[in-house]
Image (cartoon, rainbow, N blue to C red; front, side, top):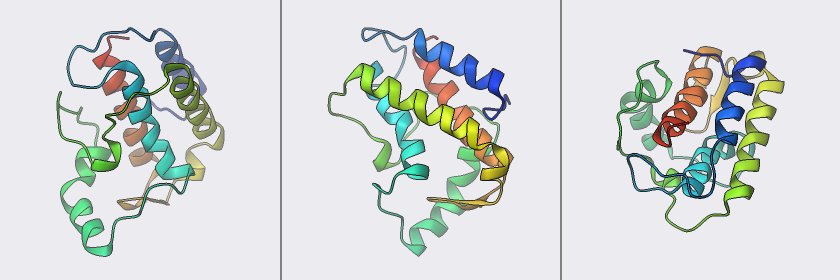
Length: 150
């Protein structure tokens, strides 16, 4: 899997994001392009912003047991797979605002680097190593950029 912490990969992902326009059609799923960008921002909000409630101990245990490997492995996500409630975006979003937020989050993550994330606690899964963080970030972005064929 490509490494989102490498500047060349970060640039490639941002180039793909910059190919999106407010009317880019999705090829599966229910979200429009602005909602998809907001959805991708949630991954970073969980890391950088304290705006989503943390799961209780029981729910965290369940997520570690049943969801973690799906999220942090290299196995691609299936099209139209279910998502956690905090990632569900149904209201209209402002395309340029969400796009810029996502680019800023990606750049911040790359600048902090994989050593910053290695062993860092995730919101839902406990400590993750740098490979798991990379897989979680890159795989999610790649999945949704493919959804819009960029």
